Structure formats: structure tokens, C-alpha cells
Length: 64
Image (tube, rainbow, N blue to C red; front, side):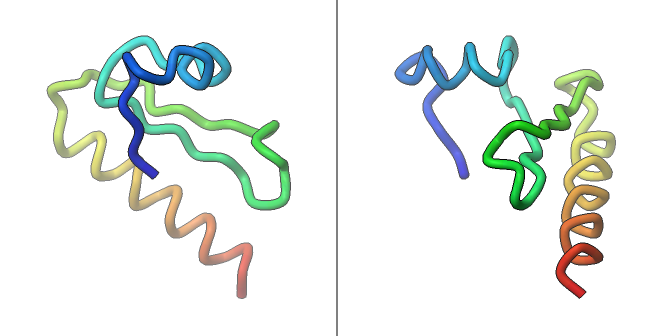
């Protein structure tokens, strides 16, 4: 999901979103309590893409 950070202060605070873009993975079934955030440089397109692919693959394995 994509949100407008400046318009959603409470949500950004909850997941400690301090920079944009911010990628946060919420583990299925955890009700948002198990969180994994991308912590690499914001200008590293390859790193961001790798993080997203890893989280999608992790999600897919949980649903097999």
C-alpha cells in the first residue's frame, strides 16, 4: 500500500517512517506487530528492489 506520509503522521510514527520512500513489510497474521523495514540508502534503487523481492518471496513461501 502507498500512503502520503505528511498526511498520515500517526501511521508514520507507528512504523517509524523517517524517510521517503519507506518500505515496511508487515508479516501476515501479525496484525502489524512483526515489522521489517528497509534500512538501506534511499538512492539505492537496486537495494530497494532487492528488499521488496525478498519480502514478496518470503510472503509467497508462507502461503505455499
